Image (cartoon, one colour):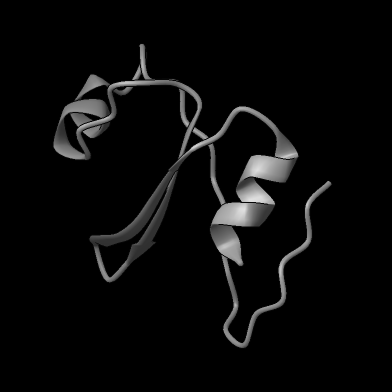
Amino acid sequence: MVKAKQKEKVLMDMTNNDDNIDLTINYEIFALPTVLAIKNGDVWAAYLVWSPEDLAIGLS
């Protein structure tokens, strides 16, 4: 499991793109797995994640 240092509370959720096509289109998700950092409805970071190490690098 990847742990990142943070100053604010972070909520994470997971969705199935086949079941939520509107989200997939709205957030322009073209590859899986993708991690989006969303604040107030706006994407401020997006990471295409192949491994936990990739996510750790993206969050640092």
